[in-house]
Image (cartoon, rainbow over all chains, first blue to last red; front, side):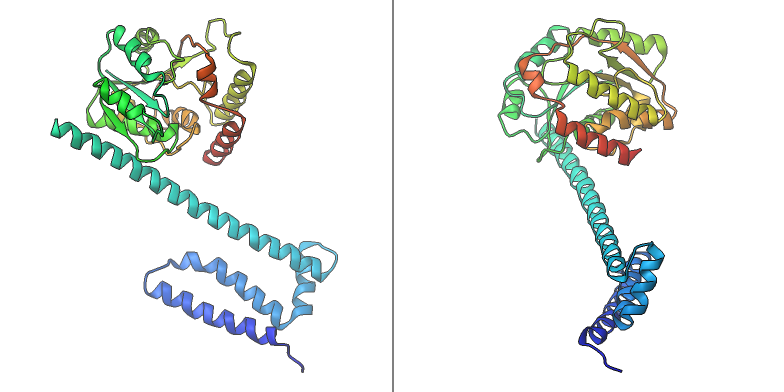
Length: 117
Length: 219
C-alpha cells in the first residue's frame, strides 16, 4: 500500500495536538468542553487524510453534494464558519470586559476626584 | 433626583444644555463623558458639574450603564437620562416625573410619537424607529418609541437593571430587561428639536444596522 506524506503527517499532528490539548485540560488552562469540537474536527481531517476517497465520498453523500471534492470544500467552509464564530465570541467577551473596565475606571476616578475635593 | 447626560464630543453644545437644565431648577447633574476626543470634559469641569469620564469611547449603552451605576452608588431616588446634544427639552422632565408618580411605573420613556405632532421628525429616523419598535416588540414589549434616550428610572429600576449592550441596542435591552425583572414601564409624551447638529449625532444607517444585529443577538 502506497502512502503519501500528508497521510502520515496529518494523523501525527492530530496525535500531538490531542496530547497538547489534554495536557492543557489537566493543567486547568482549558475546559474539556472547549477542546471537544476542535478535536472532533481534527479527528475528521485525520480520517480524511488516511482514507481520502472513502471518507470524502461518505462526507459528500452525507451532505447531499455531488462528489467528494465538493463535499470536502463544503466541510472546510463549515469549519471556517465555526472558527469565525469562535473568534467573534472571543471578541464579544473581550469587548464586554473592556467596557466593564472603562466604567470601573471612570467611576473610580470620579470618586477619587470627589474625595480630593 | 439625578440628571445624567451621556456625552460624546459635545463641547460645542454642552454649556447650553447644562444651562437650560439648571434654568429649570435642576442642579443635581452628572455628565458621563464617553471618551470624547474634544474638550467636553474640560468644558463640563469649568461649569462645576460632576463628570464621570470613560477612558475610551464605548457607546451610549455603556454611558447608560455608567449613569445607572453612579446613581446606584449615590443612592438616588430617581435618575433622568437625557441626550447631551440639546434635542430634548428640560421642561419635559417635570411631565415625565409626574407620569411616573401618577402611574406608579418604575421606568418612564419619553416618547416622541405619543399624542403629539411628529411630522418634523426626519423620515429616516421614523422608519428606523418603527423597525426598532418591531424588534423590541419581538422581545415581548410594545412601545411607541423604543429608541428614545429621554428616560426616568426610579430607585427600584436603578437597583434592578443590569444592562449588557454597549451601543444603542441598550435602549431596547432596557425595555426587555424591565419586563423580565417585573418593572413597570410606561411612556409619556416629550418634544424634540432636530437641529443640523443633533441630526449629525445619534443614529445613522450603519449604526442602525449594527444596533439591529446587536438587538437580534441579544434577543
